[in-house]
Length: 427
Image 1 (tube, rainbow, N blue to C red):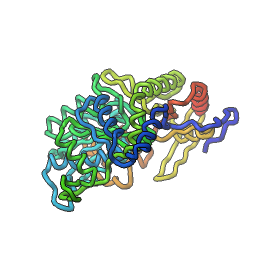
Image 2: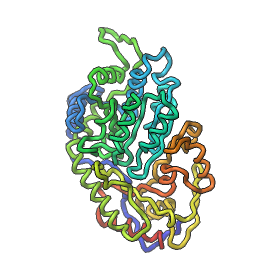
Image 3: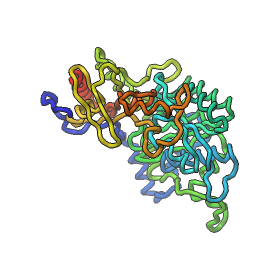
Image 4: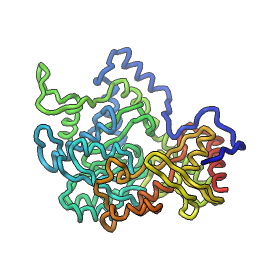
C-alpha cells in the first residue's frame, strides 16, 4: 500500500475531481422561482433553459428533464418504437432486441436500454479518442445485422470519430442515440456534440461542466419526437379537462428551481471550458519526462471540452496491480507505479481522483452480454484479464489509467503540488 510522504503538505480544503462552480446569477433565478411561486415543473426558467440549450447546441428542440438518464430512457423508447413499432402493453420498446453501446462509459449510458427491454451489446474502445471503435462497430453489424439502435458516449469530453461511426450506422439503416452528457460544449468539425444523433442527451449533474445540481436535456431536430418526450415526461397526460392517460408516462420533467441554476450557469460554458483546458495543458507540461500520456484531446477534427484530465501509465512503467470486484492491491517497484498508488498518493494530500470508467463488459451485471472487438467476439479474449493482461483497448485503458483532479477552481499552486506527488510515485 501507499506509504504517505510527509514532505507533501495536505491541502486545507479538498481539491475535488470536478465540483460545481457558481457565479451569482444562479441564485437570482432560483429566487425568482421562489418569489413567483413557480416551484414545480412549469415556469420561465425551464422555458429559458430549453431556448438557451437549442441556441448553444444548434438543435431545433430541447426538452428539460430531471436527469440525463431520463433523457436517455425516453430516447431509447423513441428509437425502439421507430425501429420496431409500438410495443405491446407491459413490454419495452426494445423488448428482446440488441442495441450496440459504448463499452467504456458510466452505466447510465447503458441502463436505459435495459429499461426498455433491450440487450446491450458492448463495442470496444479505440485508443485514438478513447471512444467507440468504428472497426469494432462494423464487425458488430456483421455479427448482429438486425440491430437498429446504436448508443455512443463521448468520453471525458472528447468527441468520438463521428463521421466514421455515423457512416456505418447509416449504411446499416440504424438510429444513432448520442450521449453527450460529458461533452457539452465539445465540437466535431465545428458542430456541437449532442447534434449528431436522431435523439441526443446532455447532463447537468453536479460534476458536469454546466450543472443544475441535477437535470438534463433531450435534444432533437424532430418536433414530433420532442412533443412525445414532453408528454411522456409529465405522466403522459392527455389534453382533457380531467386526468386522462392513454399510454405509459413518467415523472421526468425538470423542476423550475433546478432550471434556475442551469439558466444561470449556461452563459459560463466557454469560460469553464477555457479553465478546464488550462488545467489539462498544465498537467501535460508537468508530466514531461514521465512514462505517461494524457487522454486524447489534440485531435484533428475535434475541439473537446476538457471536462476531465486523465493519465495513462506506459505499460513498461506499470508495477504489479490486481483488482477484484471491490478490492485492489499492488506491489511497489522502483521507477514504476500504478493507478492505485497514484490515487492513494493524491488522496493523502486531500485531493480527489478516480479510476477510469470500468468497461461495461467487465461489470458483473453485464458480464454475460455480448462484447465485440474489431476482429470479432471479444468475450473469447477477455479471459486474458484474469492472467493480468488486458486483452482489449477499454480494459487496457481502465487497467493503466486514472482521472486526475480537474476542478476549475483548483489553483496553479495546488495543481503543481499534485503533479509533484504524482512524479514522486515513479521514484
